[in-house]
Image (tube, rainbow, N blue to C red; front, side, top):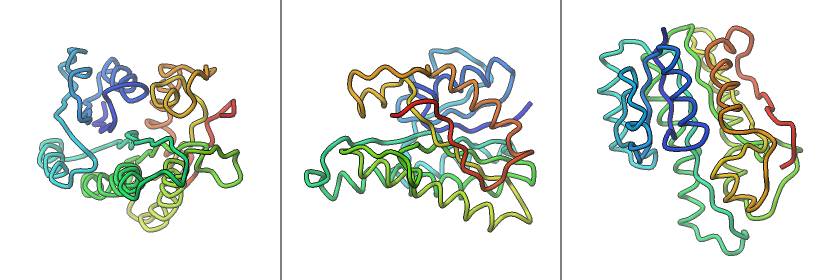
Length: 225
């Protein structure tokens, strides 16, 4: 059984991932500002505490917790922040808030966990098709989509920098999945893929994908948006 850390676990894909990993018997650290949805699942092998990717002090809590694990097998950087607003109306504070979670928070979480990961570890970062160069872009998502492009490049850089020692780093650019965040970005749109379906794919990839891929962007999308 693996030791797995997942961010953004209060709803959507993150919460479904917690369920799937826990049902298989893995040890899970589920991180989100709102812990009630995870606590209500009632799994003894799921650990949680309130965590904000934008709060530097919260990373100390993660460091302290994973000391007892000694090794982290999988980190899934799933948490994300979205602002849907025309570029000329976004304040500097709003733009920065998106990057604090989607880029700086992902980088800091990865830095905290890396010392506990070995050669066979796997860091999976969840990006978006909106962050893929050449993909269709949509107005109102300048902060969100550009931040998702940033973590794609970060993943490639990490794979190069740690290729001798490990772990493996890969990034999944998701297409439309029926989640609360999709509703925020595209109100009224019905996606062809559900959160449980996408979570099932991500779970399997997180456990075995590093055997075939390192430093790769995989486009997990069958629709636009």
